[in-house]
Image (tube, rainbow, N blue to C red; front, side, top):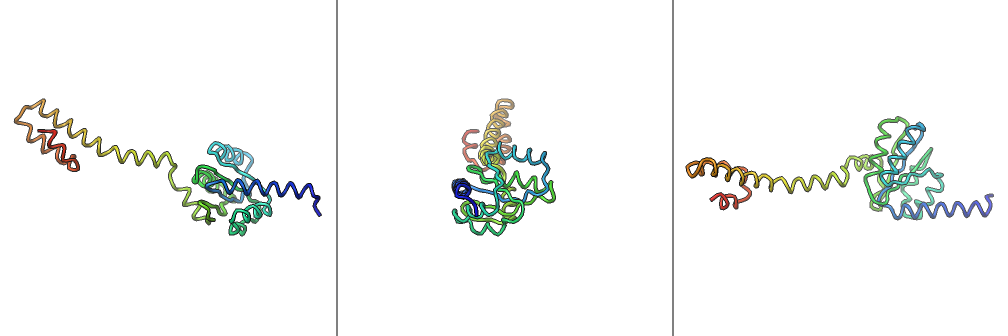
Length: 193
């Protein structure tokens, strides 16, 4: 029978892990068997830099923490040498980094995870890893917003340049050339006249 002090330590560990899971946006459970010390060190560094906490905790204690936060479905994956990666801010980071190592190391595998308060399976974790980072998504949105504006500006500039070069006789040809790229912006015709 464990002593009272050991039981208190385990209860504290479970409560702390449950609190971290509760306050996170996502987490990934892995079987870390077969990873070398060198790869483990690189992986932990990448996780730390992404703001992800990586913990190796006994399966029974992780299972109790999962019960406390309502992730009892995750207990079925707690067999063998497991670790959990927990992210407070970036839902994609743990899946993305751990998937990279799962592809490199045959015995290292993603078991399950959770995101937005729901337990997810291996395939869903891998699909989550394929989502571009927040910065990339923002850049794509901004690029798609800027693209039509740039096209319109270039069309207006082309019309103005043609008028300045060729005079009035070339203006109708320049306007016709500008209508195709600026079809979305009827104001181009008004600015050209």
